[in-house]
Amino acid sequence: MDLLQIKDSREKWVQTDAMRKTSDVLWQDAQHQVLFEILEQIKQPGSDRKVLARLRNYTENHFTLEEHYMEVLDYPYREAHAAAHDQFRKEIVELLESGDEPDAVFREIISTYLTEWLKRHVFGIDKQLEQFILKSGAS
Image (cartoon, rainbow, N blue to C red; front, side, top):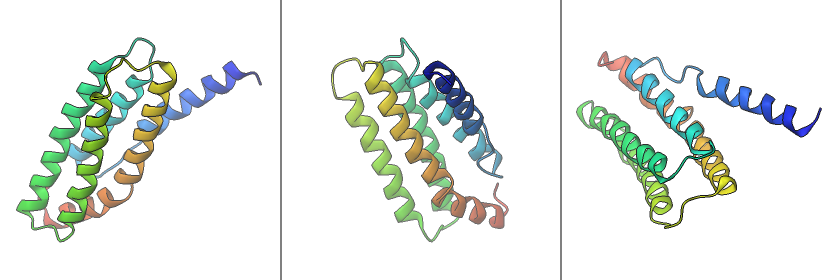
């Protein structure tokens, strides 16, 4: 198998992985899907800082909604969860403040790093929040 075939196979796997269901809370799952799509867009040729800005804006909306649910439902792990959100926010701001347009290698690194962070978050502490929301009946 040559390098192009490996890349094609990997891209298909990433697309399939990004589209798998992340939550039984419909709004949460839909928003996660958009976040994964934006992260895929970052590594596409021609993507620029506007995609990073879109990620920042969409992430902020998503995190704000989750944090609202945590507050209203008195989620017991709210502080730790919000701290994880804050770390992601910080990473995106640092990327946006770096100045230059990212090249292809840097875009790939950014996309991979943030995608892995998001997977760990979505399939980790977001699962706890999902269960809490579902049990509350507020979904």
